[in-house]
Length: 68
Image (cartoon, rainbow, N blue to C red; front, side, top):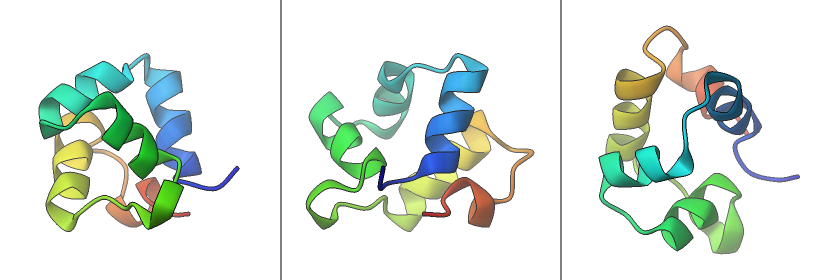
């Protein structure tokens, strides 16, 4: 499965919903799914990655959280 495997794992393990992340980023469910699963060359912006890391996973290095 392409995409951000570690991010997906951490979201599931922490019980954080995709809806929580999409609300925090101000994006639609469809856009979040495209970014998480790497569809159509969609990626998170640096600002979005920093927001996800600082809001939900401050203890995980950003390089690991967003490793593909």
